[in-house]
View 1 (tube, rainbow, N blue to C red):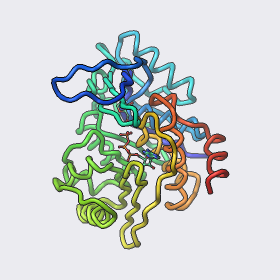
View 2 (cartoon, rainbow, N blue to C red):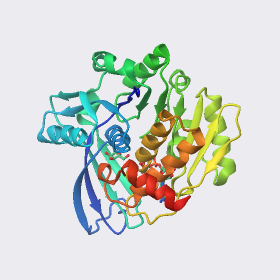
View 3 (cartoon, helix red, strand yellow):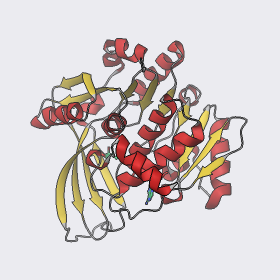
View 4 (cartoon, helix red, strand yellow):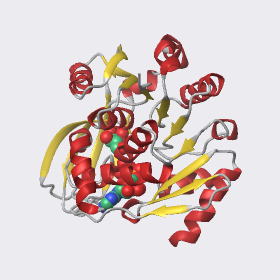
Amino acid sequence: MQKPIVIVGSINLDLVVAADRIPQVGETIIGNTFNTFYGGKGANQAVAAAKLGYPVSMVGNVGSDPFGTQLRNGLKDAGVDTAYVNTVEGPSGVALITTGSGGENSIVVVPGANGCLTPKLLEKAETILERAGFLLAQLEIPLETVEYLAQFAERHDIPLMLDPAPARELPRALLRRLTWITPNETETQELLRIKLENGDQGSCEAAEHLLDCGVKNVLLKLGSRGCLIAERNSAKERIPAFSVDAVDTTAAGDAFNAGFAVGLMRGSTVTRSAVFASAVAAISVTRPGAQPSMPTGYEVECFLKERL
Ligand code: ATP
Ligand code: RIB
């Protein structure tokens, strides 16, 4: 039987304005459309993996407001096991998102219930955490919970992939427990407190730096430039992104992480998993919204047949 991917992370309602561009500080502009979508980095990764046909359990919190029920049902409808999604008193997490015409975005997240995902709640989810074949986390929940999860993963010898988003500095003890870290360019700069030099050499140096911090494997997400794989004692490898017309890059990183995890869990090599992940992410950027933009396994298969 396939061991599930277990995702410990955030569940948000995304309030999304599509405008021609993202306004500057102090500026008011007229937007084009307003939509609400199911989002949250954790939930996006869960839905993406489930739509690819892999068994996924979500460990997270929704609020006691009406959004909470909708968000939980959204996960269920996508095929995610929600037995360990708690309802906590107070508001659900929300994200205020503005997208520009090139697909770029800016996001403010108010954690709400996600901020109450304590290590104590993870203790209650131990049965599912122990069964995991792969644990995935991000940083929209309290850091102490991610640290608890990393200790748990180490104790039970379960691989853990951390998407260090939103960006922040992280303790070395946490970095040393990670099997994979998957920062984008801004997160890499924040993690290392460096200015990332443009081009492959800068990315390779940054990845090396992260390996020096004790992370076992690094995958840098480089937007439309693709990604860079850096495994300890192996040559670094850059995988280009697929060329598509991007309309909304929100959750591209989440689509990528889910695709990568599913690829690895199905026994693909790291390189093939990264190509698969790039296809999942490329399709997602051609569609608006976070969770609604995630492709099915069949869509990815057709896309890859056409492109490779
Ligand atoms: P987000 O925060 O928007 O979810 P991210 O910043 O974590 O995403 P990115 O590096 O922007 O991550 O994107 C992740 C992956 O998605 C890239 O490595 C690439 O494969 C794919 N991707 C992103 N943008 C594009 C694009 N414009 N065209 C094709 N693929 C893209
Ligand atoms: O990664 C994209 C996600 O970031 C959005 O869905 C939003 O909820 C924020 O968490």
